[in-house]
Image (cartoon, rainbow, N blue to C red):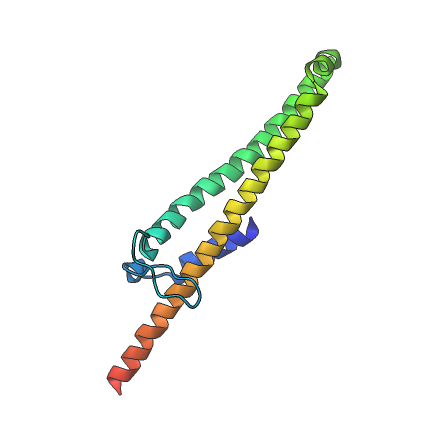
Length: 140
């Protein structure tokens, strides 16, 4: 999670002119740029910026739910016989499996978002270097 926020913050600090990313398509190392059917880096930048508040809000909701569920646990612990009869070991293991599945999925999504953000920032830096080189050559 920290890596994602760090990468996003770096992207926001470095990408001063997002319009430079228009018409630039992501590419894999050693491959030619792929223009067919893919979104350009400008669209990806907009998407990554739009996702960040959703992730932050989701994280805040999880934190709030933890606080609220701690309050609920305290409240329901007063009537432990009701809680004991409501819990089924089979249902608990199913909940654990489902939670594990979703947490793993979330980790994978955050890893992918982090990779995309870092790649976009790196590509933007390359574009700026190319612009600086062409400015240096034209002024010589």
